[in-house]
Length: 265
Length: 265
Image (tube, rainbow over all chains, first blue to last red; front, top):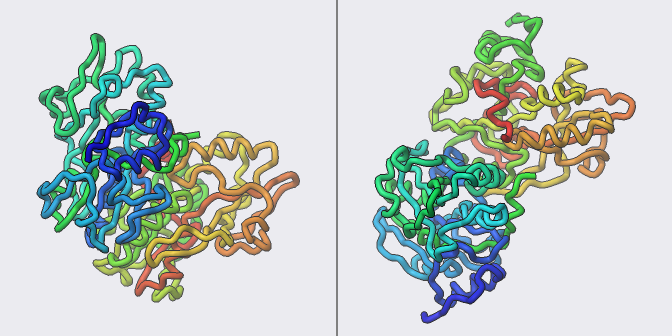
């Protein structure tokens, strides 16, 4: 598994990226495949699927559903590929405990698993950059930092958990642009849930994210927080199903859908 | 059950309207409670709930979910009331067959029923009128006409069925306004699915709607078709569950949510 990252991941087609990941490359996908939509993966047993779907419906900002595959299916309209192998890294949970982070999950897959594809804020990062809003974690070559907040989601059956957010530092005079640009993508988290003081979300230290990597703020940057597709993963952990499979945070599915498909008219 | 319609239903508060319907008034709700959101009701056994929710997720234009109550619940955040009694009329289906149209369904209710509240295009009719687009069926004091089309929805488990649409005649020079105004309400069907020739949707005769009442076109009017919340009701009929309870078409739940809550920023 000595696959090397390509020199220009932004210019790859989704099938090219998925082939690299299928071949063993493990890397966060921020900045990959400009213009193509990335998605969170969450696969749970069929008996939990209603709770997951209802949880998403009740918490659409952090959990925008892009598609749901039928039980046991590993491909669908959003990808000509295989969700068991085509992401760079996965997390496997048994009874709510993380048992493995692994580059493929074929041996874990079961015919009763239902795969949810959830929108990802990487989708609007190209639009931010085009709009003159710097995307610091891409500039710094890092995964986006993600934080568990003290806000609870609206629960659904056995699914309950905290709101998880991603954070991007934005120059104060570009915050309004960041809001208006991302508001046009409600299917991939939309506008920020919070601007400014991390303590208001119960986040003690920006340098210690719960997922991903810390990112440096430049002088005059304000931390801006968006709903994050890791939110349903956190709720699944709390509900402790026999098996759950998710992407490793920041290591997304690159789909065959275009960002523009999720842009409001 | 001799309740008379009020003189000015547009000015009523939702709780006043619901009290009238609870008292036995049976009437379509188009034009009632201006500014307050109306919803379709569909209640199915818990075992069918995942299929219904997934069907809605896969067909968001005709089936925009506003809320889902927990099994057996008859009230929720969108209404301070009782979904078994507070609509003007209901349809009860047993094994997919219509067995009763009735003003209340308390005796039919079961603890395993899950109530779905689905967005309704009546929500944007006030905005159409304010925007100078005449709403013919309200002018004519009729229920909106609804038609079963020859387009199939994307299926979900046991749920499959045709797209159902509502039709409003719009003066040709106001069609663009009708599109842009309703596009701002994606949670209540959004922009039209079709403008013009009914035959393109497999509709043979506008004067013979499948639900509701025919409406007269004025000279120069074009028929404009929107996704309709009766769509999931039609799919439930095809899936033949032991019991399903729905609103009678056009006889909606008036909720405590404001139309503005569903308007894009």
